[in-house]
Image (cartoon, rainbow, N blue to C red):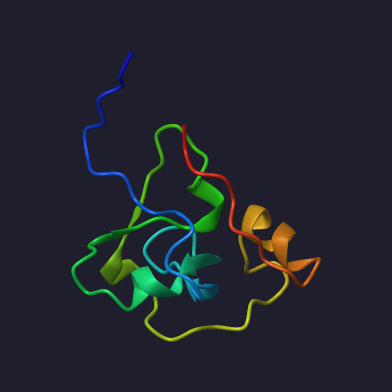
Length: 99
């Protein structure tokens, strides 16, 4: 049995050496979220998926203009709690791909 996707699948782990970085989501909640570096540097990707939504079944991706271009240092109370839970261990791991 095969499942059809309404859009192409994304390589969640990214290319070798890819990493997650903090950027502020100014167009929505105003929190800092983790985004893949490879997606941030690829101008052809219009909608970006933060770390906290990778495993969501129907994620609401963030449009590029609503995300700050420069990396930010997350401040307590100004970062996504789900993305921030990874930062507690000082090691950000790539989550599993969406089902």
